Image (cartoon, rainbow, N blue to C red; front, side, top):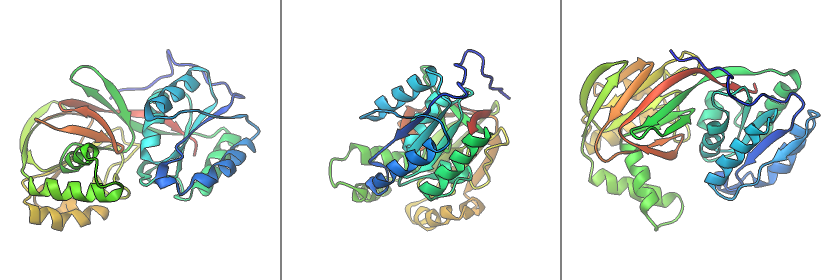
Length: 311
């Protein structure tokens, strides 16, 4: 099991500013008007608040890295899982504490780590933790690609049908909005076929034909779908859920049960709990925290206590 230390990382300035990454388009902009109030609540802790400037996802990630390198006292992300994912790349494995304010379409990481779903209530939890100097360690997953590229994620890595649908939707130029995703589901259902996956679970090799493959540090993805229902963010392990040779009809019948996590009782579903998994298949681009990340093959490693939450 890998340990995380603060060695070689910037030290935290106890009286330094709180850096805030805010995505104004998260949740289709429905929480945009809340940002001034959220910043005021953080400023009420007596610390200066620095709103990071970014006009793209890459700029957002770079701004978070720069803030951490400058020695901020904490980093707060206002948005959905995608915003959290960008922020995690900067704070993972460092002593800089982190607070997610759920304001997106999908807020799985924030909710699964115990923050209120209401943004104002969540920022109050973060502000209270800042005043008290209180943090709570949770695990993260570290993703390594074939070329050595590394990414961190907090919730779930999708590497099956859901990842394929996301990839299809991202290539489509029409229709706009959520209907594009619905159309992508229909297209990929028509093309549905099990794919051959090669797994290495804590060193033990296995091959399987599967339609759904997910590696969870946390239970949920996609806005409350409990794909890895038994995942625990403090156990130092990953939950790997594999859905086998589903046909179209069976998949559509099983998919609603993912919201309750009862799909794992289906005879075609297998679950594993491991410290590390190597995952390979042809033609799959993975999605972590809802964000496009790396092509298979990848290695996913559980890293205990890789993040300090303001909670």
